[in-house]
Image (cartoon, rainbow, N blue to C red; front, side, top):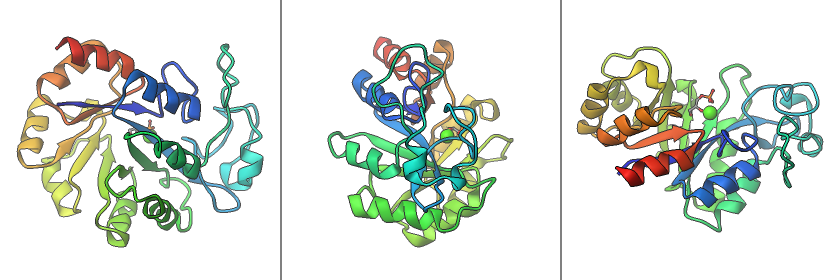
Length: 241
Ligand code: G3P
Ligand code: CA
């Protein structure tokens, strides 16, 4: 059964990486959420995709130059005409607190490919352990050294390499770094590769799947999960299959 993971929350209809987007993903019945993390000036793990706040808030500057309190004063939904109640950038702790009230899984993407945030892995894993979410969180990153580091810190938490360039037999690579899953850009994986990877015991969760025909195709090959901005659309396709 293909799981539906809401990319940055329900980012197609709600401001990405906000509680509004995560609540919407829960409301429509997604199995999980994907979110991105960076570090604030005071070392808090904050949920935002870019290294800067320019694209998604009403202010400017780098995440690492603001404290959590300052970051949470910015409006993270100002680009949406519809008003939202909680338009701030959440901390990972706040998202984990909300997860105490549901059974959703959470794919935390470590955004440390540009800025080498000190101790990001240790801080994220510390929170996972504090909330006992070892079985509910998947750690992914385009920085594969980072997820290998995560595995060394706590091998009970699943890791998954993200990639957007062609990888020959990606399941062999995954096994070599102790990853039980791969998160490829859909453009660099074929249906055959999905089937072969999953036969080899490596789950495939491609991103970002927003078109219905593609959703249908992936569900047909029993892809482990799809990461989408429109979980409600994917659930509709799954239910009709
Ligand atoms: O985890 C899949 C996807 O989120 C990776 O790309 O740029 O949307 O973080 P991006
Ligand atoms: Ca992401």
